[in-house]
Amino acid sequence: MGKKAKEPEKPSAAWQGTYGDMITLMLCFFVMLYNPSEVDVTQLATITQSLQMNETETVSGGLSLSAGRLSDLGNNINSLPSLEKGKSLGLAKKKAVSLFAPDVKSNKITITSDERGLIITLLSDNFFDQGSAELNIDESRETLLRLSEFFSSAEVADKRYRIEGHTDNTPVDSNSVFPSNWELSATRAVNVLHYLAEYGVRENSFSVAGYADTRPKFSNDTAESRAYNRRVDIIILDEGHF
Image 1 (spheres, helix red, strand yellow):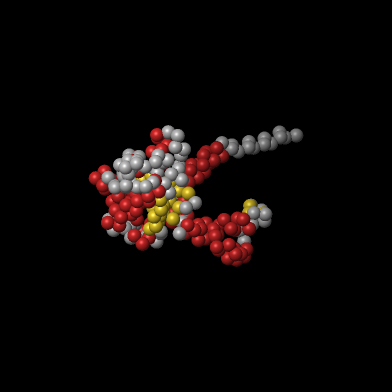
Image 2 (cartoon, rainbow, N blue to C red; image 1 turned 90 degrees about the horizontal axis):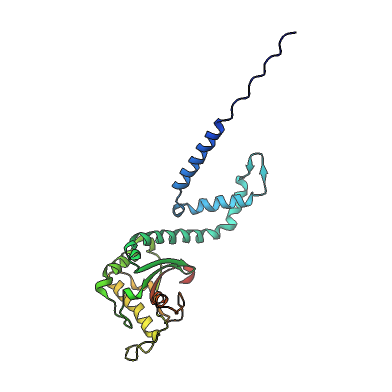
C-alpha cells in the first residue's frame, strides 16, 4: 500500500487581526470627520424612519430597507421642522461659542441652552455697578459690539429674542432711584437693548422682562451664588416660546 497523502495545512488566520485593526482605524477616521451640526435633516429622518419601520423585518444579511415602505414617511413629515430648528440653533450656538470666546474666558458671559432656546448670560457685576442700571460702557463696549455682531449674523437673522433682567435677593438701597429689584432688573434689560440698538441691532425682534430675584440660578446663601444670580439673560427663542 502507498503512503497516505499528507493533508494540507490550514491557512493562517493571522491576517484577520491586521484586517480588524484596519477597519477600526477607518471607523475612527470617519467618526472624526462626522459633524452632527451639518447633517442633512431630511436624510437623517429618512434613514431613521426606515430603520424603525423595518426593525422587525430581517433577511439574510441584516435589516431590510425596502423602498416601498418609505412611502409611509409622509405620515411623519411633521417631525422635520423640529429637526431643522435644532440644526439652526446648533449653528447659532457654534457661532456664539466662537465669537464670545474672550468674554467666556474672562467670565463675563456664559452660553447655555434650555427648552426656551439658546441663552447668552451677561454676569451683571461686569456690566453694572451695584444697585445701578447704567452700563459700564468703557468696560463692556467690546462685548456689546460682539453681541451686536452676533445678532446681525445670518445664523440668527430670522429669530426673535428676549432680554431678561435678574437680581439677587438683596433689597435695593433705601436711597436708590428704584423702588425695588423689579424696576432695577427691568431697567437693566431695557438699557442692554438700547445699547444694542445703537450698534445697529433691530429692536423690533426683541422683547424685555424683569424678574427681580424670582428666578435664581443658584441659592442666595453665598456671595458667589448671589453674584451669578445677578445677571441679564439674552435668549435666542425657540419658535414655541415666541
